[in-house]
Length: 197
Image (cartoon, rainbow, N blue to C red; front, side):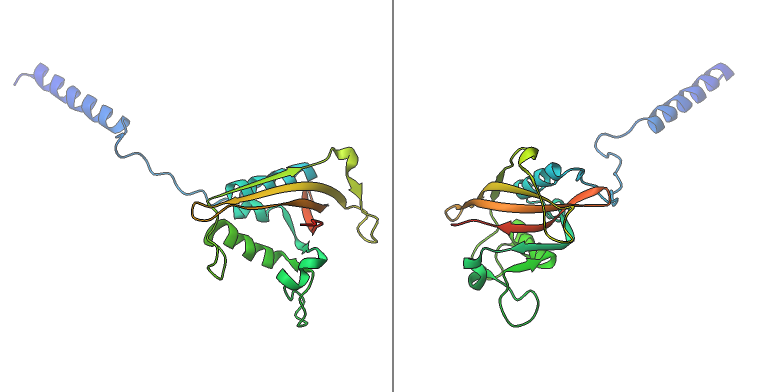
């Protein structure tokens, strides 16, 4: 083998190695590292928080749902449902007309994922929430002592739970959402169900 042929062979090997190293195998793509960073949802206004609430139901996204609420959140039932679905939120042995964030989290973990705790209902295959939000000029300021910085947004809601195996469940009515700015973000601190049906 002459020197010229040997140099050419070495250059060819180097070129093949360079091409092989620089190319990626499309059948063995590079694995992406999981993104464990905290997801920051836009809650820069009361309106975006209510949009997040709708999207959380429509996507069955528990993390997005919980991002809408303050740690001090309370859901307030209509008086006629206190004895039917009320829980003993303050551990005094009496069903209360409200519950806090932990109970809300448990209910929606079931709704979005596992179905009712008694096994009577599966998790819906689809959920649709539509909030009819009034223009900001119709929003109210709270006049309760200590809550002067709270915005109250009355909304008509239409909620549909769709199942493949059982008839749809439909609920509609009115709610009042009490929102307060916590740091840079708005959060729901109270959700009052004013429905009559």
